[in-house]
Length: 203
Ligand code: GAR
Image 1 (cartoon, protein in one colour):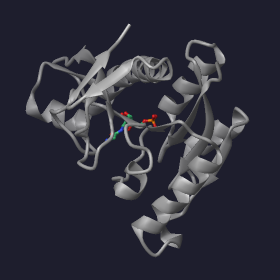
Image 2 (cartoon, protein in one colour; image 1 turned 90 degrees about the horizontal axis):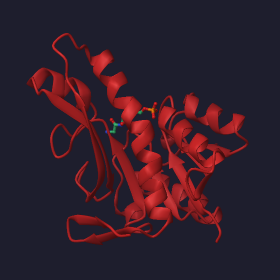
Image 3 (cartoon, rainbow, N blue to C red; image 1 turned 90 degrees about the vertical axis):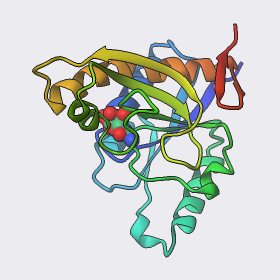
């Protein structure tokens, strides 16, 4: 069977992107990254894509007069490249219905906290400041509300007394790199069944 074609949206360093690319190269997942789109010209994720021979596209939000037009441009490239699953990997923009509507139940996000706790752009620091003893990461389907779609997989890590934002982020990121490829592979194999808020993993 043909491999699932994945399009990744990233704004930053792209270590999750790299983990997905590596898992694909090692044939650990039935999916391949065919396209990387960024809203930041200098996102290292674009370089990572280039180094792996993957199409890398910078779509400058400033060049579009509305969020809708920017998202329409993203949709056009995703469709031109026959993308079957969109993965947000450190993409720091809230999506609207223009994109979500076109890829219903086919957009995933990874978040560096155990949702529904600590949504937003500062999940690790917020968890630390709250004083939780356990945090982690979540892969979920994307809906209009931020960090709120049905949860696919979660992994927990301990929060240590002497943790800083950096040390906790590093511990969580190690888990992110395992969890995201796993979730993509389950999707690729048709093993995720969404019923309301719940995602069942079928065998
Ligand atoms: C990751 O920790 C990801 O969970 C987080 O941004 C980082 C991106 O790292 N995403 C969010 O906070 C989304 N709310 P990366 O660019 O090295 O993959």
